[in-house]
Image 1 (cartoon, rainbow, N blue to C red):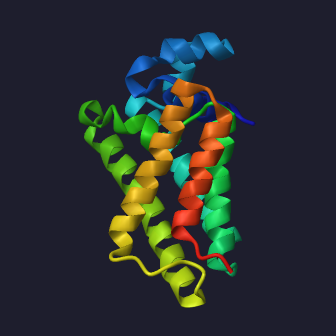
Image 2: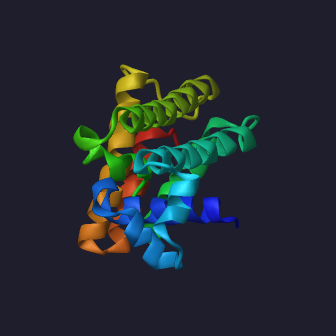
Length: 186
């Protein structure tokens, strides 16, 4: 991993752990033992680093979409849920959830990147619901967009609550309940 990628990973971890406003270039420089000027070389401003972090998560989502392009809806949904289960097992939250609490203080370009990334996650979920409804593996909802927003909000909130309650089984039970609510048993 090169320096630029390492900076993105560390910034991502810090943003997920503490939010965007709770770290500085000094925090990163102390973690990896480089000067802050070296960070500025790759990312002139903190907002540039923040956007790079969101972009790295966006690329991971795109990679998931590409890998599951020809899969059925249940497989796609399962991979997405597995991503959230992995975050929970690591005591992490998704980047969209981590930055949601800072949204009012983020620079406009970063705020836009977070909103676009959240919209991409929701668009992916809508496409899964629509595909699953055609495959008869996901029930028809009154409104797919509203259901998507509710599922996405639930996933983000469950990760946040997982940090508070520290009962991993409760996260698993909750996500299983959510799964049962949005899938059809065959």
